[in-house]
Length: 106
Length: 106
Image (tube, rainbow over all chains, first blue to last red; front, side, top):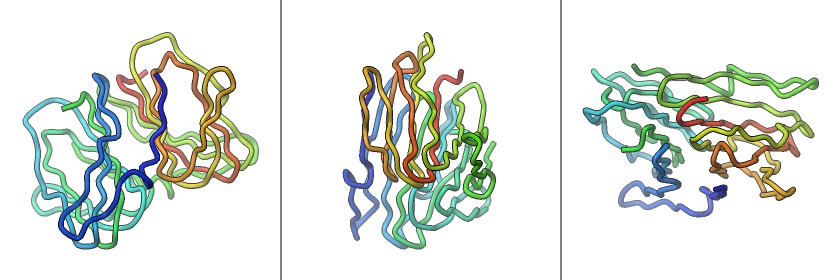
């Protein structure tokens, strides 16, 4: 199995809420693309299961969100790694494209 | 566990060969950043083990390589998904930064 996905072409932006694209979902990992318009966010959340996730900034800038209102800059090429059970989120300052990889998949 | 890695700041380019940065290595997944100078490549290869990998283009342009000399354009935001046992590689046309995620980790 080999496939290519053009994330920049296949997902769009909306003023109403962030737009989610399922890039890949297998027994090994799940990959999602979220596009945020400026000001939109994926609120802090967590799941009480094993595993880790990465959030990669493809384009645009904002903030990674962590527990206790912690904030980390999120710029192109920045990667956040988090346990799935650790609170995490993201907030866009500009239009922003990120890729989330979850392993093992939820 | 939560951590942030600034991939664009922490890895560099070399005229001699591509530069590899281990971004993360856990029992869930392994994440590597490869920086290629124009013309450099990660030759086609495969491993006879279960699992899948993703290659995400963060910056620059080139080609994803597949079996039988197949070639797919690789531009920013493009994602290649491949079984680990399927032949895969990448060749840079410009300076190029990619992120490779392997699950389960090799």
